[in-house]
Length: 313
Image: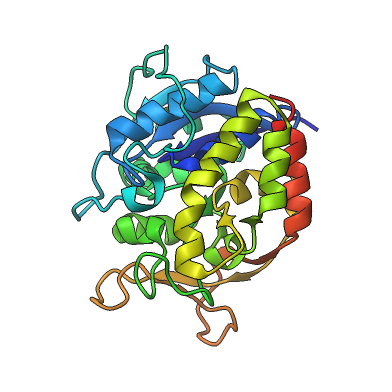
């Protein structure tokens, strides 16, 4: 079976970095066509820089990295330095990238790539706000039917929100963009907080990363050392959740995840619940399903996969 062609749309972020590393460590299952950077965890100049840093850390400097949208569609940018640090990749001491950004806007790269490949052959993997993906769908609606699947990290149901009481960060930053994507008709698979909060980097799991003894293993352990302080204090959990690697893990081992095909709508008007993913988990609305919304993960299997793949880099 041939490797799955993907575009990773990202706002690195330590957990984005781990998701990218997992994809690049899995060439038999995943072919990364390129990375598209979006403003989110930190502003666009940093997310586009961080994406190049991670490709070079993985020994894959040839991966194209395109800078995309620097603000949400209709709102001021909200960032998360309080979680990820001022660079977005605080923790390890990583060198600046040697390579330059690939010329061309990220949205154009997404559109051109979908048009250049056979329909149903390219998967989009958004790890941050959905601004780039929504802009591509809005500006070139013909590409929607060409998408194999959109596998994204975002939203929540029973877990509530992590940036407001009701909203998860990626959706909250650009709810209008999320609304476009969730109503697009493209096949959607969603990794919400309900799943990612079960993928906790406990001390033994982080020790396993560090014990790899490689630049990648040590960097991942140091990233987690940094950002887990926020989650431990906020949630009282045993470690930091690795949100975004759930996306790439799903492409490799979908059997690690369980969910339901349900209707998910995005709240764009309420002051109290802006950015909420209104997930009809119990199918009470009668609205047509539009997303496979994951609800559980085999966390031990997830970390076994992650550690084994990171050891390859």
